Length: 288
Ligand SMILES: C[S@@+](CC[C@H](N)C(=O)[O-])C[C@H]1O[C@@H](n2cnc3c(N)ncnc32)[C@H](O)[C@@H]1O
Image (cartoon, rainbow, N blue to C red; front, side, top):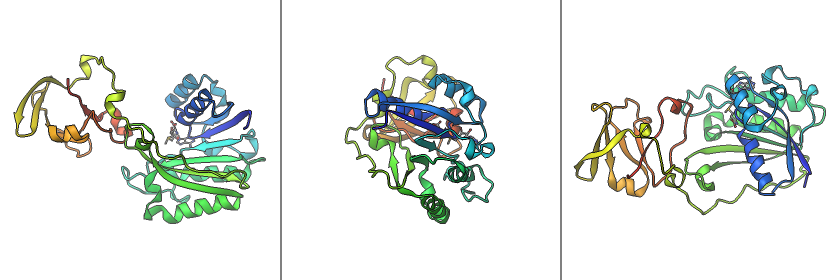
């Protein structure tokens, strides 16, 4: 076991992989880790990253396209969850190809850095949306992997879902693990059989402002019809048989968009939270 894992991340966001390392340390799976650098361009993400991980902003190398591989300090582990908007089925699926000039083509910058860096990292973790494995991106993904193999990395990849690891969010993600010179074997973790639902995570005392309706409804067959407490034109329709099964259990009739009109039972999982969820949150039905 390495004493201190030196880690550098690209497209660092708020640093969720770093949070995972913190948990692994707490649970004594690893001895320790040190963030040697991170790379992020969004000013709010940078501030959050530094606050969450208690590190100085000067460790941020900024825009990946401006980084020179030969300037990078040695790290055992690189991690990059490169932008997914142009790969995701929630977007237009316009590109991952290095010539597509899309945000998702930025993943190739990590390949450039691997070629340029003085001492290559032993391990690299790439993460992206599951649709990167779709027919549309098959050839580009294959050439991405071939480039890594040419640099002496052995590859392991898989799509795994957060719901299989005790998190009640349907979030399938593609992981590609690259290990230098076949230094170590890797196995993806086994699915956990412990199941959690949203109710396990929701606060017991929630501020009134977060409730959309009062506890009054009209019963119609298996459905309960609720009015929004501030605007009676907004109607929510909840199918109680589906509520009991968990998952999607109703509709916000006011919403124009299919995805944001969905209501989810607290007895199941919530859908993948997307960036647009910041203005239009996933709505969870709770029995009060
Ligand atoms: C899919 S998010 C990664 C989220 C990250 N894994 C986390 O744990 O928060 C992609 C990130 O890449 C950043 N990004 C986009 N273009 C970049 C560039 N040229 N250089 C560095 N980061 C960039 C975005 O600001 C965004 O935070």
